[in-house]
Image 1 (tube, rainbow, N blue to C red):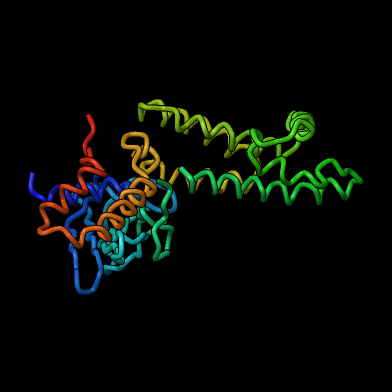
Image 2 (image 1 turned 45 degrees about the horizontal axis):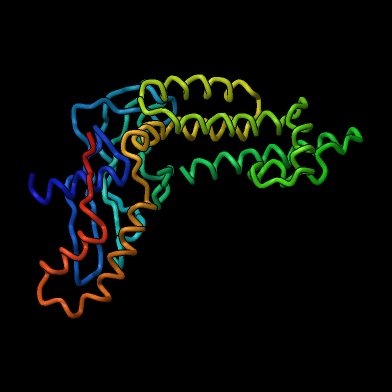
Length: 282
């Protein structure tokens, strides 16, 4: 396999993209300290309407646009792509959403697990902030002063907090249901087979969608749009944290590399400390 093909597969894994998206080129611009990644759509694949998610034909491609990604060591990293526009019988011509960015955004949506947890946590907090107002209007102060109990890790609670939380989470409270939805989603990461994970998500999504808790339903729809990215994580377990850790080691080696006579010695040093990347696990 050529170096170019290895780079393309490497960046496809790091970006969490798969067919019909593909990495076409990776261009390193040393003088500009920039890495440019060109992504392309495999033509012949059906498009998806961003409104209803239904498969439909492709109308055309939007003009090429850039997205700023996390830096690769000292290099600015940019993604470039022309996004297909779906021709939906119901909603008309719509630009498809892309798996690496929020709609209309120019920065990537990195769901690699931290970001999923953050989104769920913020939705639970929205429910928590709404419900006390409703209860206080009825003279009920049950949720007053309970914010840390819903947003912090129960493993770090004092015994007093554990006792208080145990009583609250079993009550018929909206925030208790939202918290349970968040906790249940953590089971998703335990699956190793995409089929079982997909089935779990379908059940979880259905429950949350019917819950009448708008913040939770909103985040569930957001996760559904990026489900393929989440499933990619289950297959490869590659996150930006891994990349950043390797980058940090390489930077340290670079600082000590001034005495090396040639690049080969520098490369051996990197392999000694970082090991050979197994990008294609069986």
